[in-house]
Image (cartoon, rainbow, N blue to C red; front, side, top):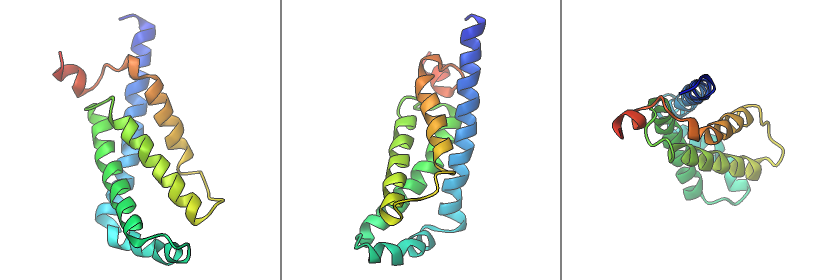
Length: 138
């Protein structure tokens, strides 16, 4: 492995760990601190006004919270490195759709950095080396 490849591998590892930490804490907060029922109740009035079914709000709250928490853990560990970024991309699309339905002009300051970092991880997937997948599949 030459120096350029090593740098790409380290960049991929750094971004993966950084993004994993962001997703873990976001999911952890919704699952264990705020709790899903409180997340659902926080958006319930707005979704009722927009005539969005409550089962959809509940499902997306569970989906995004679980996806963020476990996706973040798997990102850091480097397990399922080809699937996890795609699941997290779907997660971000669900969040974007949900926020756009609730408030057409919403603040991107929390979502946009995650999108950029996830895009970089997807682009650097050929340089994936430091992760459990690499060591387990050898």
